[in-house]
Image (cartoon, rainbow, N blue to C red; front, top):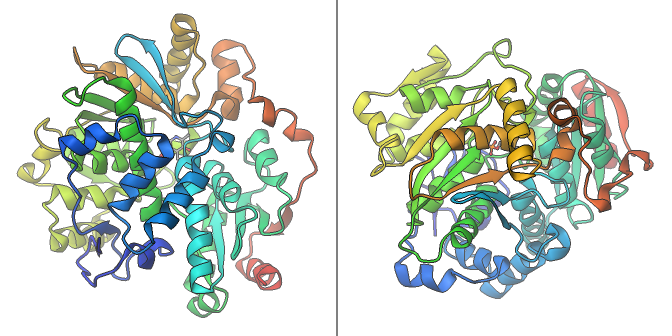
Length: 472
Ligand SMILES: *Cc1c(COP(=O)(O)O)cnc(C)c1O
């Protein structure tokens, strides 16, 4: 399988060439040259495979430059009961007839980002060893991404992580999760500032091309294709658990921010998985809901970006969205470049022509539907799930469930992706239920563990010096 850029660069690249990359050189995002179609016989064969084996079969269709036995071993090492807490890896819970939650948050950091990041840790270690190279991952986090990256990369050979976070602004549980890691290759840097200051420092360091090259600086952000690919697997796994035969169709509801999770659903649907609707749920930051209702994509300013009780969905723009628009436009790279390049820079957004937009939400087109949720909706949904189904859900999952229920269709099972556990966002759970959510037994008491974290001013120069001193 070769990969191309959404903005027209068609230099043939294999999976291993793009694994460690972020953006394509022309500023676009990498996508496979085509989506492999799964025929009925293959789908029937896959039903019943253990998760790690299913992952191996799906990944094999997109990765032909890692020997099959190695890829199989990496998948088996990633998707274990030990890491994900259950042999099924992503078990389905029935709320009521035809309404399910797919548990994606039983990994080490209690959020769905572990599903992909854990695989990335194994793939990075493998590829770096094969090349005899090292990588220093520099990132900024306000919570979920940073901890998922650290738990994936801890102890991995050839990789170091330098993770910036805004001092004192993450939830106590998230701070404890990250700062209690004692692995020598993990560096927590608390910046005296807000998340944007952390992000600005990452940009400043990455824009110093000489520093970046000399110190082999890389990232693990959500535009990484391997992350997206790993997420395709649980759409298949959820489908097999909710149905008995491959003639049935299901819908998925996906709490969305950067359009990474639901983009994997789009890829699964393009491969032929019988998905009726991909229901996109946003919180008050409704950039994507607005698009799927109107065909207008309008990036928000930071002043217009709300801080909500589902903070991992607080986005001003959606970094994976270009992948979907490229497909929607019949893979017209010229038009994609115009929209996400010049038009976005000039006007802060774009509006598609009605014939361009129409297939996005048609059932015989790309099958998207969307909706948004508010803080009051989240509280009500958390309460209702607790009272009706004795199920405690987190705030992001609540956004998904709320919008899912607005879009149910008779005879079509609806699978809501559970993207985090309630213990991560305890304050809102207490507000909704008056009950303190318990973390899983292995994580009880982590707030009391010793912490490793360096406090620094919001100064790119100081961060560079720190990396220089610790990157070998
Ligand atoms: C990252 C995250 C999301 C948003 O996922 P995208 O791939 O950015 O759309 C939703 N819920 C939780 C808990 C997350 O951590």
